[in-house]
Image 1 (cartoon, rainbow, N blue to C red):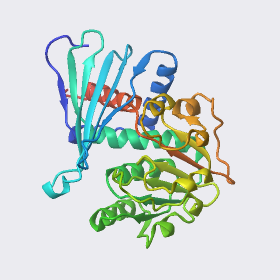
Image 2 (tube, helix red, strand yellow):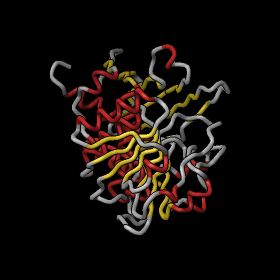
Image 3 (cartoon, helix red, strand yellow):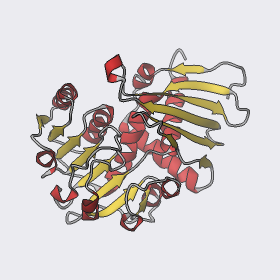
Image 4 (cartoon, rainbow, N blue to C red):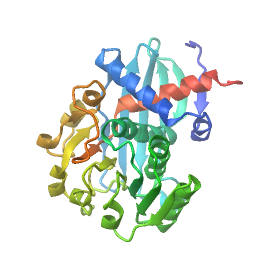
Length: 317
């Protein structure tokens, strides 16, 4: 670990060029879960801040002795960025030496956030979704939809996707990305049209606490799996009991939040419980399942430190 006041700058474009696969991300997240369970990785609940004007800000903090790093992420969602020609989500990650506190690297947060979110979904989907999943549905068509398409297309034998979103351009872009992977893709005429018959569902609408719920879990067929990255805001609360298995990302973090994503009686457990075997895994064709999550510091740490290690090992670094 370097002790001089020098650090590696890794913008999103360089991170995307490192060749990190979904399998790499899944492995990094699972190792981080094991490290936390063994007391070798420490995290705090994410800290959200809502100024009241539509913006959403949050930070995560995590540290480990091996690799000896601290990861601090700060991200903001701005609904007005589209009018500025900017991505809706922007932020940065700092990596520091966990022994000395010296700055080691700065990373763009957009790539890490997209990849770690899809990676978290992939860790759960491998354990609960139909391994023969062929039909995917995407509600929301932004960065998270594209990263989940990449991840799920690597893991499952997808053949077709249905897309439903508010933005025509993003919807067409997502369909084009699916077709480039050899998949059939179409714009759904309604949320129900997208969900009915889907094996895998990704819900990733822009965070908006004034949003009227418009998705009904009862539209999903038995055996369907939903990755819900948007706090469940677009899902009708009275339909959530239709998920026989509902997993969240972190029980401790959820207990610290002012408003739960779902009633605690519906929650089977969290990511750590699933990975370590405290929650029964396995696809059940008669039962719907879902992963409802906020995002956790552990995921940011896993992907940021993986990317940093890969960048350091790259020729010319």
